Amino acid sequence: MTGRLRDRVALVTGGGKGVGAGVVKALAEKGVKVCINCNTNRAMAEETLRQVEAAGGEGFVFQADVTDAAQLQGMVDAIIEKWGRLDILVNNAAMQPNLFIDMYDYATLRRLWEINIGGYFHAVRACLPYLKKSDCGRIVNISSIHGKRPTGFDAGYAMTKGAIRMFTRELALELYADGITVNAVDLGGCKIEFKTGNAPIRAHNPLDCNNPDMNGFRQVTPRDVGELVCYLCTPEAQAVTGDGIRVDKGLILI
Amino acid sequence: MKNIVVLTDARMAEARLAGAYLAGQGWRVETVPEDICLWNEATLRAWAEPLAGEIAGVIHPAPPRILGGVEAVSEEEWSRAADEGPMAAWCVTKVFCGIMKDNGGGSMIYLNSIHAEKPVGLGALFSMGCAATQMLAREVAQDYGQFGVRSFFIQKGITQSDPDSKSPVSSVYYGVDMRYPTRKLPEEDQLNGLIAFLLTPEAAPLNGSDLMADGAMTQYYTHRRKVEGRPYYDWPSS
Image (cartoon, rainbow over all chains, first blue to last red):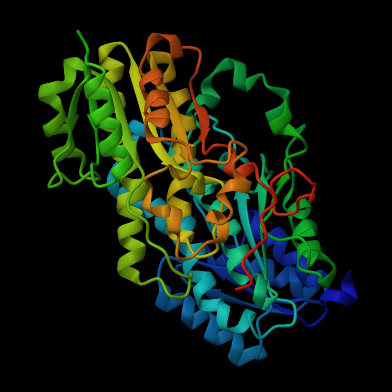
């Protein structure tokens, strides 16, 4: 796979930590030059870049709020100025506040919508002119099994992940003629440094606390996600588009 | 006695038809006035509270469609799609499921669209809103199901008098006689009969259900065998 991705250029939103950092490192190991987007935690993004460079990869950190279309455009402009091309967009920046339906107010839910789906939407718009010029344009939307199955601990988050499911399918049809594939990666529980939202409220349920499936046994890692993203970005994956690929060690089936 | 069904948005023809059908079945149908913003919790709650003790069900239709390629969508359209779609669905849910929870139960019916699952290639804003509402409907089953509130998500396809049967952007509506095993579009009152059933105690085993009400149209796949004596649709040349 290494040779097939070498010297391609990628943007990974929310690439400084967690799942995004796993994707960044996997792509960089295969020769992809990566713009690591971060918003609030630049120090972790710089550490991810240090690890990329220590492994012989190439990248740079760009701090931008994905809800701001102008900042997104500035980030894409910086990529083009540095490398002259953009082949891969990995939409990943998101938050999960873990609130029940009646705990949301309009402002909180609208903010979540602007980050979790608006950030993806506007990043696509900023990147499309360059993805269309690529001979292997790729969009990968990191999503969640919450977009397929309810869990009862965050309806707002599930709504945004459901939206990503259809955003992915619509884009796949719309951009097929341009040779751009669009896929979603639907994560189950993933082992990362920390999450941005509250702890899941129903984790206080003794049944959940004693659930071995959610206690590490069936957790995936950012590396698992990164390897799948790398495959989806290869020319060999051209026929895979509009899909939502579940990465959860089969947890949803239990 | 709880005999009120609330219709949250009468702009869509299928919602008005459902309301008229239910009224004919003896339900008292109350429609949220157009000047009440569906994503403003305070004003929606103020309108609903005088009816609270009698509300047995709520029908929330999908909003008007905003179509167009992802690059062509304006910021105003983006914002309007967010408010009229997922934000309105959430606010309606919070207000009315809260009321029905306090009433001992009820039916929350999202009269939505096949585009929660089926893309058309030029409808990202609309489809995203549909899918978000679909996931909300499933979460409602968990959040409010324990209080007797049941949630249903209807994926409506086109019906006989539906203007969308002549979609300007999608080929999905070509070849109706092939796509529908019955070779005809469903009638509005067949859909309305389903809605009426969901309001009854007999529908109690259902909750969090996705109900495909599209006459099996979305089960159609373009790659079909051509068999003598069976219908076959030849695609238009342009």
